[in-house]
Image 1 (tube, rainbow, N blue to C red):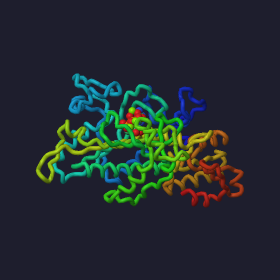
Image 2 (cartoon, helix red, strand yellow):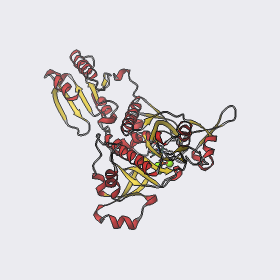
Image 3 (cartoon, rainbow, N blue to C red):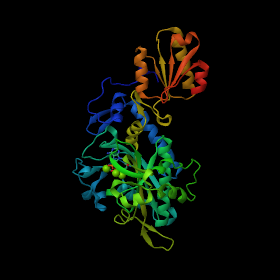
Image 4 (cartoon, protein in one colour):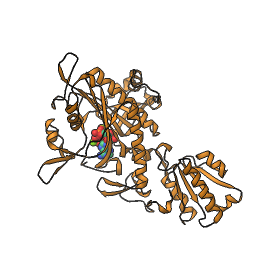
Length: 438
Ligand code: ATP
Ligand code: MG
Ligand code: MG
Ligand code: MG
């Protein structure tokens, strides 16, 4: 992409309304624009990151055997009346009427709707287990939308739903999603810790929140320091095999959010030098809730004995848009964002320090063509901005590598490659630079 043709509205001033660094940097780097409280337009650079985060989530869901579909954002109130949640949900739910005075709502979550879909088609235990998911916008009329996309009102969530015939099998589905979650966050370079958690309005008796430790997080959390070093299950993990040893390892050490924190147990199980008490950002949550939706909605499955029973359900959310903010909280310095390669909007920023100089233009064009040909995403700053402005801009938007091309270096046949994360600079031939990064 040539910057001269792109849409990257960088802000010079630090926006006053932004309280935390990720929100400030997303506004300054031209990733998002607030359209109303907690409602954002995703500008091109932000959208690229949002899509990469979503794609990692999708790949790991698919690997774990979940199947993607897409449900609408608007739902009928009557559906939610079947489970009693229309009344129970309270002011976080956005309620709407259409021209025929039919009551609708903008979905804050989808347990009721997926149960409706499931009961329309699936009758036999032979068709189970199944896990279905979608990546879709949600609306929750949060009391205090803040911190940019971290607590928006409209936000992008991946939500998966599991359907099993009995509790033992439902616990296996829960384990699969648990393991997939460990991999999702690790692939983004984040260490998310599964912590015992309250189930809230989703309901049920078993739940873990996946939490990234951060001072700016909204929940207080307590955990054993060693959970920070546990191994992440590999790509080759067999999701049809026995996952219980992974689950045991990850749930064996104390880790809990403040809602369910048990001080005596924490102190009993965790040596003093290993006790972490800090704050965290919830990036995902998994629930097992059994018959909570299938029973009131009469979503019945016939077993091998010919008897009908409600299916055993669970649900599994990931805050896709919140993750973009959380990633910046975990990866930045005083100059801007430092994207992990897996979610970077472009891998390389190519800076032409003297646009109009024939040799510099030619070297940049050759590099640009070589990177494009290799399928490497590159943002080519071909504008007539001053070199200092280009450096600041590239540091701010945080692309993993900068390739800096100017007449001085080219006189010796060299370009400079800067690694954003370390600041390390190398002087390389064009061919070396291409081989290194393509
Ligand atoms: P929170 O405790 O932050 O309000 P929640 O527990 O209400 O979140 P869940 O119902 O568990 O949220 O939804 C699944 C995921 O969706 C959360 O783990 C979080 O990452 C994300 N999420 C929830 N609310 C928001 C929001 N207002 N803005 C952005 N992401 C959100
Ligand atoms: Mg909430
Ligand atoms: Mg929560
Ligand atoms: Mg939650």
